Amino acid sequence: MLFCVVAAELMAGPVTTIGLLADRAASACAADDALPPFDTASRAGRMAFVDALKLLESLGVVSAVDGVTDTYVQSEEAKVLYRVDTTRLVRLLAAPVAPSRVVTAGASVAPGVGDAPATPTADDTPDDAGKAGATPPPDQELIDIDVLIADMLVETRYGDAAAEAPTVSDSRRNLWLRHSVIRRLVDDPVVYRWQLSAAQLAYLATPTGRTMVRRAAELAGFELEERAEGYLFVDPDGIATDSRFPDDASSAKIAGLMLLDVLRAAPAGLTIEQLAIEAGRILAGLPSWAKSYRSEEGAHRLARDAVTELRMFGLAALDTGHTGASAVVRALPAAARYRDHREDRSRLTDVASSAAKAATGDVTGDAERGAARDAERDVASGGQA
Image 1 (cartoon, one colour):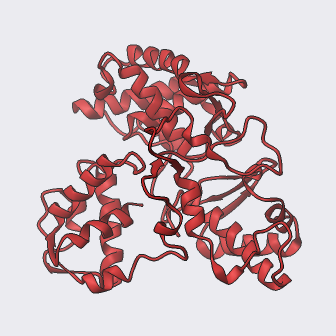
Image 2 (cartoon, one colour; image 1 turned 90 degrees about the vertical axis):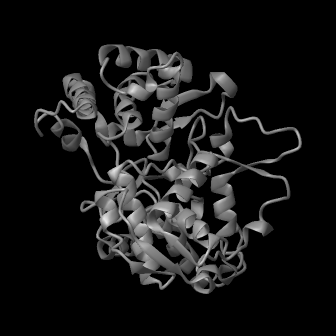
Image 3 (cartoon, one colour; image 1 turned 60 degrees about the vertical axis):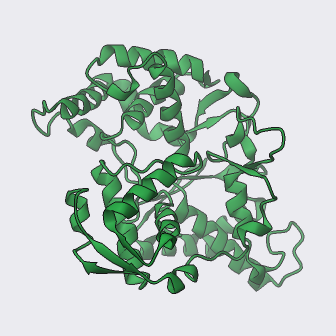
């Protein structure tokens, strides 16, 4: 997504610097709730930004006139001057269906991702659960960003292959099934069975479907994990991973890892208010950690940010049977990957304590930071399209 933001900001003029471009991208992300934050002070953020720029360089959209793009990873004060080929840029971003054809005038895009239904079944598909609690202005229509993207990716070459009673040939329908399933596995951190259509599940149950998915995973450098609840492409080398969980550089992710214990112990789910109480206990137990969440509403903000991270990685969902302030957050099956932490809470405390020490300059070594790395499993989350 950062790649798209950077490409959009390059339209400002034929010449720019890496610092100005980064600032514009950060401002654009901060101004749109549907976009993840981009922090130029974060090394991980700068690495992702440099990756986007290097891809644009390889495509001939930008060229470095003075300086080297990689130097920005080491310091946000790096000086690099770029020339922008706007003609090539406008031809770069394209979708089978233009956004203007799927978005009505005056519509507002809702942030977040689609969540699980209250009782997932094989015939269920993602809905607008990500909009729970969001109330658009009276004159605006609220659009689920996942639905928007799905509508833009409808390809005419497949005809009505996605319909329950398609009229296209079997070969074209099988091509759509293979494309849609593999693309989702590559793009999403985890794909649950309830998120797939009956036809897609049937395809995955065939010898051909299983072979094609395994071959795609092998060619892309992933490891396929198949469980009763769904499927997962693991990125062992982290090459295609643009965001990791857990991540000891993010207070929200550390809190999310801790709150998973509480969520997994409550199968019926917990409200944001209940999670905020737990977040308050975490903050009280670690007074030197998460300085940005020390305001009066800090615990509530930390709980919300942590839930956002958990939803992004397919570890938790908002229960569609609840709305507004009473929306219930439930742990999803993939959360069981971190069950070891519930048996050893001291390791969780070590992660947060290490992060707090790093923030204050009191870092005693790598041993204390090792807890997060021990549990970390790199999962591809939108790294490739």
